[in-house]
Image (cartoon, rainbow, N blue to C red; front, side):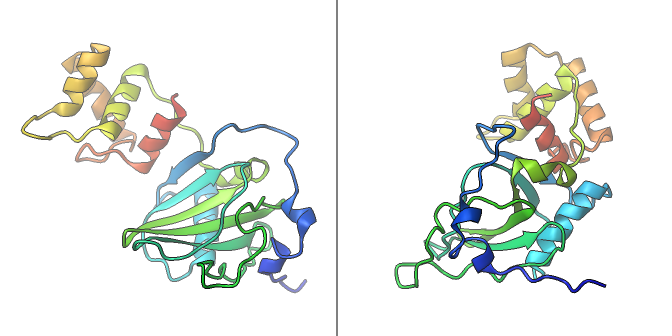
Length: 229
């Protein structure tokens, strides 16, 4: 059996300008796309993506997982700032070998040249663990478009009414400042959807796992909103 290769930080951005400057010549993405993952999903792509993130941060015990597809350079400088910090590690998509975490980059630490603009080499992903104001926001697998397909769950298609339900559920609390049934009220005002149409679409979304039984949107439901399908 071929020995497992180790992935070192210097392979990615220290004294490796050819890797830092690799440019994708295929599909152009004008904006990053983030896909939310269901932690208990059974499809191969989701299990693979979550497995890579857990390999990079094995002590993580949360349920928030995302995949971000981008061809933009990454700023991987990491340091505490107001109770917030992002931690970064890199993972080889073929061998699943993992780098050490990126060292701190505060004003008191040794700077890493190029850490503010890292372009991912082929078959390498970055895993980001985000702490914001002391709250753990989970893990994000950041991949280049050329490596994204095997790591993304199948896209979700919705009807027009389902899309309205998901959009307004994602955007509004249902009760706020003394107002109730706020999601439907806002949706009706903008789209003229009827109560019957709303309730039917909502029931379908719950059945499909786009909303949970309490009517809150799920990660899969958020993906459907963002895809605009």
